[in-house]
Image (cartoon, rainbow, N blue to C red; front, side, top):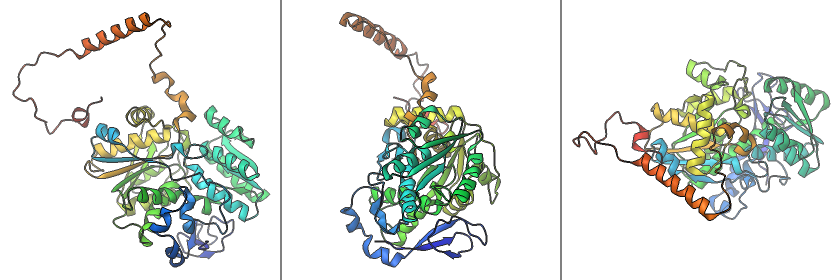
Length: 444
């Protein structure tokens, strides 16, 4: 059942038909779908959801399509992992990881937004489907276009990680690598969409595309038993995800699915591309564009399309923003992998590292519930971690050689663990007020 009424400008609230429009022709504000919430409330209930397939279309009433979903029938409803080991290491009580690194079919959160954009593209009669991308979106657009039989063009910067380029090429789109940054690619795609009347997921279909991201908010609330966490940390690239998580929370509350305060929402960006976080820290209304210089290419967007809405959302919810250096990003990838068995790309490493900083700065209380959003899979960028990994042990196939190696290894470990002399016992068992979280929660 469709409850879509049309589009509305986020700034001046002018109404538009539900066409391939993405910007207001009066004030140049972004356009957002508008729904008949009374009609949605009649069928989108907890009882109804309990019997629906576990994909993003379970929230069909509040997604901007007018007929049946065309793709994404296995996308969404990704795990919300209770991350006790990571919580222990960060020194917090209750921590969850919303893990879109296992989203179907291309292992990133982009499968949510593309499922919606591709379905709407077909409803609007487009036969060519494309995008401007830093990698993950190109993978998803290519896969969903292949499933739907659409001609596909994906435009990328020419310095992307090889695995991400391959992750698009395998679906046989036309990959166009542009000499320049993502922002250069995006400008070109805007011109191509206008001249050739093609459907671009994150340009002329952006109003519909962005709505797929709010299913992250719906799922977090539902997977927590229809309650909200107190804090949510999200990576920020073009700015699609963070504001829509908040929109999902608000719609849950408005329809009576969940109650309580909307969580404080925090922006995580790489230090080498942090226009939104810099604007937050400097008190600006709009981010100043920057030129990206970071290993976190999937979030390396210097002029985020929805940057204003990210700032607005973070401030309205009482959140904040933090950055991570490239070494901290790699540390974040490693920490998440060794504590929770989740291998994320640099965007996820950024989120983990930024969360750690927000906790250490006292922005996030250690005894309150936290959800961090992991948006992509580390196997797409695995070359970044190669130099940090211990080399395999090479042995013959003889058991005696293994036993000799094992004995030597255990002997070396015992020497490292040998107790040191203690000068006194007076302060043993006491915890100083200056004790670090690492001392309280040592690495196993």
